Length: 150
Image (cartoon, rainbow, N blue to C red; front, side):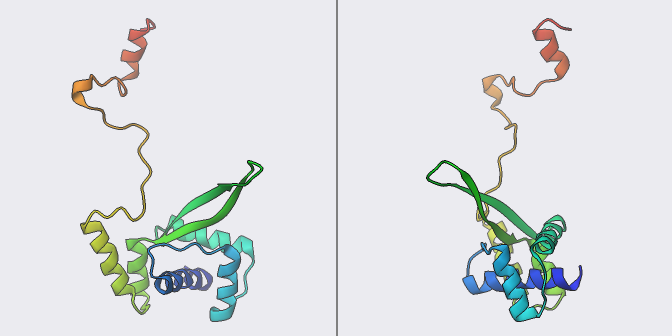
């Protein structure tokens, strides 16, 4: 992780701590301004998006894209929700960021309580009830046999 990605990661953490929430919703422009003000780092939007993408690929953050429909029924994108994962909190702790151990404890308590702070997407196929005669998931050979192509 280079210095810019580390600066973005710490900026996300500081916004999260200051807002006292489990997620944040800064625009990329706001992140760029904060990087300039607090880390003396000047970057463009494309590099900010690239850094966020890499932080997400490393498993340190999770982003959820959001959209709104305006009065003309046009869909427009609004800033994504961002949260730090347990792996991200541990990475912050290993880098010596103040308060990261408290974030780790909070995330672990959410996990222990089965707290649904960040709704998970539903799997495409739900396991069905055995009494209902599950027909949703069956081998392709059986499907072809039922319709007469076997």
